[in-house]
Amino acid sequence: GKFTWVEKDTCIACGACGATAPDIYDYDDEGLAEVIYKADGNTGNTEIPEDMFDDLQDAADGCPTDSIKIADVPFNY
Ligand code: F3S
Image (tube, rainbow, N blue to C red; front, side, top):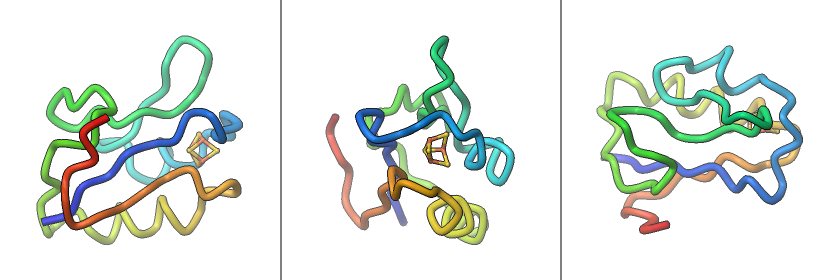
């Protein structure tokens, strides 16, 4: 599995990730992205299933500030 987490300190609220992968990313009140998959709460601890890997990678590739992080282990934020 894969895990993902948004580094809000560098997110500029461009809105690309939620458009690309709406089941994984949504935005907080300030427009900053966060991981919402299965109520992850942007902890980066929820395992993303293999059938969503394409969306995951497309979102990470499309982020202009490289704020979308992907790892093989939980982030624990
Ligand atoms: Fe922010 Fe990057 Fe998404 S700038 S809104 S994390 S595409």
